[in-house]
Image (cartoon, rainbow, N blue to C red; front, top):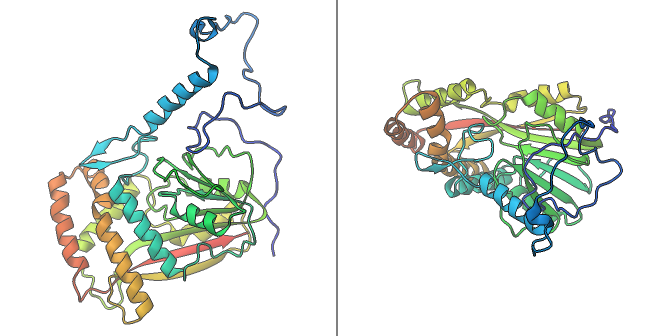
Length: 363
């Protein structure tokens, strides 16, 4: 086995990122000797910061914990103040940085996709040979279903799932917690992880090399990082995907709009290079062809294709609306007309469409 990533003694810098969904910061939490000072620029000439008399008055029954709770509630409310576009709900935190909605319809599609991937991977949650990991990070956790199932299967493992929206359930295994966070901001975790896991971040990441660099930095020596993602270019091996079909126009326009937005819609084939450039060793690559529809003769592929067709049909609006209306200037009605024709192509029994998915894991 090649040399593991080097360790570092430099703690991550503090940020003002939103608090953990499950564990908001407590005003009574003691600071450690290694905590940074509250201010490094104060001088003797600076004005004294006055205390809020509403908190310090002998006549008030309020406690500092009450005040912190009010501020925490206000912050949580702002994170959950979701914008609505074309009757779809989108992230409030870092609004505009992610093209997909976060409403119930999209959350259902994400769970469908999770089931499709479990079938594809023979019901495995991880392909890397991590043995009894103690700390696991799930980047872009979405509904949290992967983290929850991994936590159920590994009760002695601590799992942290991060996402732009707090749309995960509140009832989760005790060893699983979720945090509202942007994976493209500097990571501020106070520990390294035995496993860093991420999947289907296509069209979601602006700077993949930077993301890989942070994953490398926060993977323990001897630990594993596993990334799973797509090449979303549709193709057919028998030539049934003609250039004049609505689905061809749709997927070609969609992928270019995502690139114009600054997000790579086809990161799968590039994962290996990005991870090697970040410093990971022993890169192992698995590639999967995924049918779109139940057209394969093989029973296993037929099942996967059926699940894939269902999640794509569920996601057509989610994939398309924000990119086409904001990036390309289409009217919502124009989008719906195109998508109606795309659905017809998807359900054409003579169509043998496929896409590809790649999975890389490294130490």
